[in-house]
Length: 363
Image (cartoon, rainbow, N blue to C red):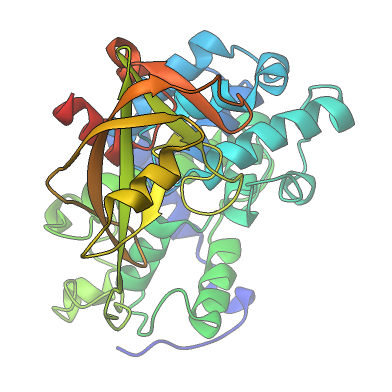
């Protein structure tokens, strides 16, 4: 069955939301940490962390964040280093920078109270249309449509929609459906159960691989199931060759400390600390390393360690570590750009997960 493009009126179907709500109330998730409160701060924090990240990975980070930053005021007042240290390992670090900036905006512009209107929420850093709708629905009961990756997968399968969901024509059509299929406004608790139900369906039943179609409340409506196309939908993006980038990183050691360098605020691992870098060279000269080390001390010994690969969404990074031990530390480093960090505490450092893992293994 082919997709038919229409208007939101074309897609109105009260039976759809009723099935989702009934299933969520009986079989959906009800005990997640952020479901125990309608506090907009906690809802917002969870929704940002859950972007492109699975629930199991988010829970410990969410709990640690709340322990250190129990409200939007404490998060807004925290230093960038504190925020990034708590986020280290969760990935997609732009979310952490936006999280901090959003907290500061909410304090400055809204006296610490998140607005209830999705349109205003969507204007804050890191909050898109779907996330704004989820926050408004869960916190304030506002009737607003979500369309995250899980929901797109449910819709494309149930309605048999061909085409890459991220393309404009398909995404516009999916938004029409999302708006049309919501339960009627004004019924207490319905929008929360419906919104959570869509998320739960995509996360627990209508998964990318091995979907549990027999348990799905929408199986009798599902075009993909009827046409034996569940594995084909949603339509996948054409695969691209991922380019590779090589870099050398200096593991500079002295007095049971390692030298860390603060990365620029934007870009890969923006705002985190990492190891100082050198351009990759097959025939690296000792003099090149000595020059790079000059601001920090005199080189005593150098050893090239085994390369480490890390794959990002758009390129593969091959890291060749150089262990450099100093004969003498020259001077104190500028804390704005570098820091000597105790080796014994490296697990608590605000480092990207692959760098922290690499250091833990080496040290």
